[in-house]
Amino acid sequence: MGVQTRPNGRTRRRPLLVLAVATAAAIVFAVGTAALAAPAPVVPTTGSSGSGPRAAGAGGRVPSSLPVAVARSATAKVADLVGTGSANDTGRRYGVEGTDLGHMFMVGSRMAMVFGDTYGGPPAQNFYSVRHGDWRSNAIASIDPPATPTGGLPFRGMITDRPGHAKELIPSRKVKGVQETVIPTYGIATGPKNATMALQYMSVQSFDGPGRWRLTGSGITTSNDGGVTWVDQPTARWPATSKFGQVAYVRPGGPDDPSSPVPDGSSPGGTVYVYGIPGGRYGDLSLAKVPAAQLTDASAYRYWNGSDWAAGEANATPVVKGPVGELSVRWSSYYQRWIMMYLVDDTGEIVLRTAPSPTGPWGPAQTVTTTKDFPMAYAPYLTPRWTDGPDIWFTMSQYTSYRVELMKTRLSPLTAGGSAPASVLPQSLPARSGSLSAPPVPVTTVPTRSPATSPTRNPPRSTPSSAAPTSTG
Image 1: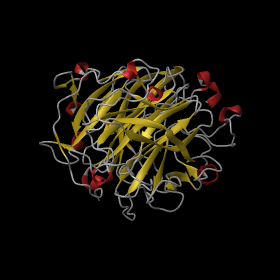
Image 2: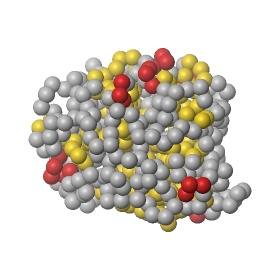
Image 3: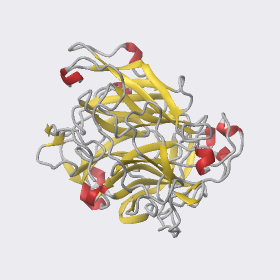
């Protein structure tokens, strides 16, 4: 199916069928035979943001007691990461002329970047002005994190199925109304030495309109060979109407947030918090938690019901009022707080919230940028590195160019009791409200250490198909 068939020019993610174990031992990064989990030089995680002067505060950090406001003038595009002529020249190197999403997680000392619906040439500034073939529902790149991302994020390679051709990790039927695509919505590494890669995916039945799509279900697929082959996990299934059809992961003290505070009574990296929204961009945000060792066991998840953690998703109570689109959450050791970013589709705003704990309470949203500045922008994904300086780094997609871009912004400390200026207040009334509820989670700061060995469109999201009960025949 060509991209031209997507309504209102919005990219939609197609559900991936049951993750089939890829045959080819020949599926490797185009730059060599090493898979994503192969050893690479360890990159320092402190003092490496290359962000320039630091704001006042103990140790150059902003005290968590001080309120902060988005410095919209600091929001800027750093580099295109995909397409011909981009920092990675993926059109020529991997047959990737257009793709979206680009959420990230650490696998050993390397960073994985995962994409949604992916297409080949020809190159075009207005991507959908010409027809593109070679549709793959998802793809993955490997990055050796540089000391600073100021020049972009250079790909070490991509998983390929033949020389110069990025591989579809999770297959999909690509039939609208049955299974249009399978899109990974977030990834994480767990298990011994954090070598098991896990992708939560949504199986999309059909993209029905701007910001709205139906799922056949969602699930988790895993890889133990650095992303070369993937196996669907039958114990990790959520139905089409789940509040967790799309997710974001946070693992305090884990490889992606190594210096973050860890809840008292738990071990660093022992718990994964799962932020969930239903298919599309118009649902509320709900919260679950699960032991990291049981990520692929749906029965081990506990859902926040407004006063306690309870078994059964039916008990999940919204913690942030929708509409909430693609989101991510990361700890900032510089601003000493958790940061959440997501898309508010109906007003075309990329917004940011902060909280003292991964469970909240989340403050009112502030606008980072809008689709007026970056037409059809969506999917802001915070990086799992370079969180120790004043610049906040994130990837963002634009449906017009159908490229993933590296972006940055900053926060400005306010005086005690100060409030954010009108220029960052979102038009969205729900976004102006804080958390609906927040679990009480006392935390203890963990010392910084190296990690262990489509806003106006329906953006494509990568997700394996077998997790969807009705996605496979």
